[in-house]
Image 1 (tube, rainbow, N blue to C red):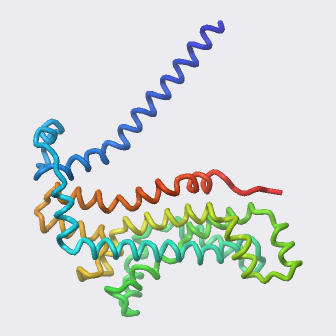
Image 2 (cartoon, helix red, strand yellow; image 1 turned 180 degrees about the horizontal axis):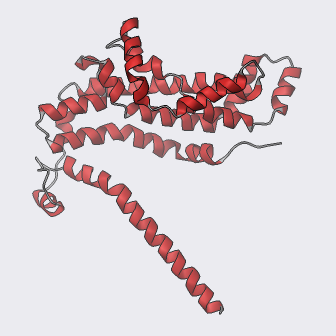
Image 3 (cartoon, rainbow, N blue to C red; image 1 turned 90 degrees about the vertical axis):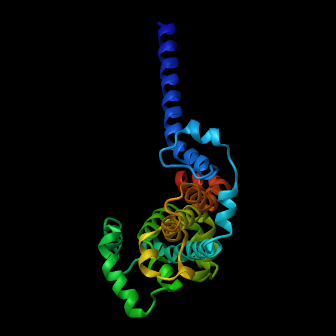
Length: 279
């Protein structure tokens, strides 16, 4: 009987490992394929893996990308816009989330419900109204159009509100007794305790804006203001769908995000799995 149980447990474990291996292969194969194409010399869209390996590999696609088509400007634009939006979300969403989590004011529940409703609204619904506002303000082809509409997000408010609600109130009450102001409490107590959630929010918004295509495409019309996703689309047209250069550009654009996840992976896990020490 015991041997049967051990055999069943072993078979179940092997099945789980097999499922994880298959899932890992399916997940990482597109990345592997992108790397292979980026290192190949003029790969055809119908090329097989054996044909690509038979041609050999080189880094000339990457060197061409880095020295052509204003790639450095596109890259810096993406870094600047993504960083500003991500930092803005961390700061402004923290203030709004603290108000929803700790303060009592009129229409609090209605306002928070409106935040949740916005989460369910597809972004394409607000595309035309937002574009008309950008035109009215004269922000077309400017950094203001790429940052200000996205500097506060409902997902950031919701995430931080849920996190702050789990923080112990005793620390804030002790700080008030000592004469600490509201802003000091937020900066010296709430901000350090909410750091794991803030890291998750920063990386989420950075990745979201870094990969955004629709609104940067609508709000910019010159090469000097384009971000990487928009620039890669135009680059594809210029190169007549040159997969080697296109995949090299996509690989370089994915590198900063991969580095961020590699550096902050522990904080990401902590922010997603831990609430706070509840007293």
